[in-house]
Amino acid sequence: MAELIELRKPYLLFIGDAEDTMVAKTAAGIAYWRPEDSLGQMRLTPDAVDIGLPDMGVVEAANAGAGTIVIGLAPVGGSLPESWLLVCVAALEAGLDIASGLHTQLGEIPEIQQVAERTGRKVFDVRVPPANLPCGTGVKLTGKRVLTVGTDCCVGKMYSALAINAELKRRGQNSTFRATGQTGILIEGAGIAVDAVVSDFLSGAVEVLAPDNDADHIDIIEGQGSLFHPAYAAVSLGLLHGAQADGLVLCHELGRAEIDGGYPGYAIPPLKQVIQTNLDLARRTNARAKLVGIAVNSSLLEADQAAAQMAEIEQKHQVSVVDPVRTGVAALVDYLEKNI
Image 1 (cartoon, rainbow, N blue to C red):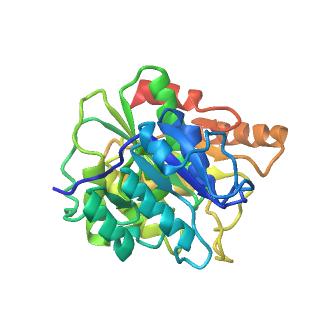
Image 2 (cartoon, rainbow, N blue to C red; image 1 turned 45 degrees about the vertical axis):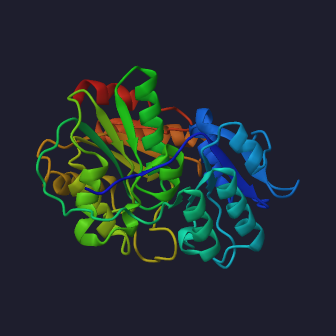
Image 3 (cartoon, one colour; image 1 turned 90 degrees about the vertical axis):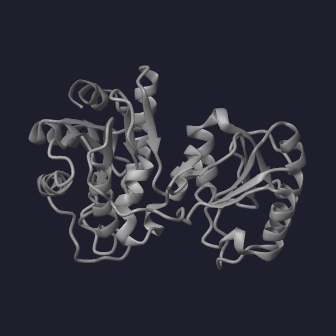
């Protein structure tokens, strides 16, 4: 059976010399969502982004109990800067594992590979899926599952899933966030990067990610892409079938009219069409799949405009509409607890 990536905690978060908050967003996301796992930050220059954690070197962090140094940045050009290579080697020597979301596979760099083998430490390239993933079976799994789906990429599927899981846990519910992308994996410390899985095994990977569980357990599965995206619809469909979701949460950015990222002419379909298409395809592996609610990103609008549009959508579709940042997700979770 394939083994999920599972990272040793707590983390030393590597900021490097990044001076742009967006470049360091993975480290910032880990610190925000998992403060209990975030021991310190490592910055190579005083001008680097400060995410509010104690500054530490690898030896200091290891002595303080850190298990893994997390590298979530992307250097320009894709190659690994010499200074970062030295940090990786020093981290392994200090007894830390390395987790990386880079396109460059650290585990294949000879200097890092040799030190990892000598020290017995692990290098996790989280974009690389586990070996021996099975094909999907469609056999009904026990436990409950909720999947975030989207009208497009980058509309808040990960953030919404994390927020829903956090609210469930606050209420004492037995729930788990299931990460399907590199940032989510680095936040959660476990998961499968499904966009790197060979398509025949994608649904099976999701079945491995969210296996049989207790009847009262709720898996909150991070969605990817959109069924209406001309490039990434395949991963969205594989997730739908493998998740066997009891409930779907539709994520949408208010004010976005076209598929983002260089796809002119591809309009975002009406929400009714997006909802129905996702439900029709989700019901292939779970005939009882239903819409739990709609989570919007309203950052393009003023607060009063956002509130008006959310109220209109709620009235039209007769489900809770929330903005995880502006309103929280309590109303959506209220429905989930009663109906899933």
